[in-house]
Image (cartoon, rainbow, N blue to C red; front, side, top):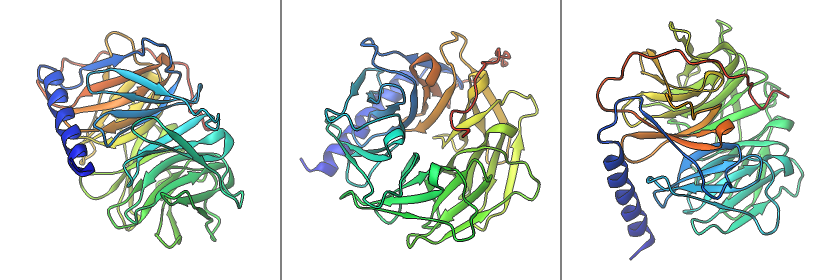
Amino acid sequence: MSRATRICVALVTATVIALAGSASAAVGDITTFVDPAGNVSQPEDITLGPDGAYWFTNFVNGRIGRITPAGEIATFTDPAGNVDSPVGITTGPDGALWFTSSANKRIGRITTGGTITTFTDPAGNVDGPFEVTTGSDGNLWFTSGFNSRVGRITTAGAITTFTDPAGNLNRPFGITDGPDGNVWFTDFRSNVVGFITPAGEITTFTDPAGNLDVLGEITTGPDGALWFTSTNTNRIGRATVDGAITTFADPANQVDAPLGITAGPDGNLWFSSMNNARIGRITPAGEITTFADPTGNVALPRGITSGPGTDVWFASTNSNRIGRIATTGPAPAPPVPAAPVAAAPRFTG
């Protein structure tokens, strides 16, 4: 069986499990999972792996975690001890998972079997790597927040970093592959949205309305635009590929410090609302609905991702859980306001 066939089989299997697990769920129904071994510690980001499982970073204990669609969790450590405060994670073009190790300025790679390798930049130009994505050029791209750079790493581990000649980068954070062949990013200090070409040329855009403050993650939406979170203004933003920015607020005021965002399987965008422990949905037209976990097992949700089936998965940082929310099904009951959680975005420096 070829590797491509094995991946296809894994994804089909995951889809069947996901559909079976959420067939009777209503839109917005949340389920959370804990690690019986106790090795999940402040999960940060999450992504769908090539094996049909979801992979996530653990900020505090430096482990990389894996959860199956059925909720079975395993975590992996680096025997070399070179993973420290991992943040972002994505599936690479080589069939492995790639992640950032923020505190020791490394980029990491983990196979689906759990073998970890990390890479440093010989030029010393990586500092505070945050989020990471796979670009259309077949490389991995990441934000290097503490020295205002965007980095590129090949699957062989060769690192190059780029600065903005215009000086508009201060703390680049979120990053995603765009629909235009470029890689798009957010900057949470300069409050710009920008892109970098495969050749390393950077362009940034601001919001003329001034509605952006402490930008979070970014993703490509079903409408071909870039969607992102504005944490301190409690807004969800949309940027066209030519840089026109629009932001949306929740009339119900149930969005509080949004961070992660992903394109959902239902044609909408889904996001985490950290400080009130909600998961939100925004349509391409800008209509927002949020959902709370009645069991109270969601606390400071951060990273969020889609996968096969009809669910969206997220990391619940302060409850050390991985969560799943149904995106389709019967209409939910009217939302009940959740009590605020005393918390703030981690990266405010």
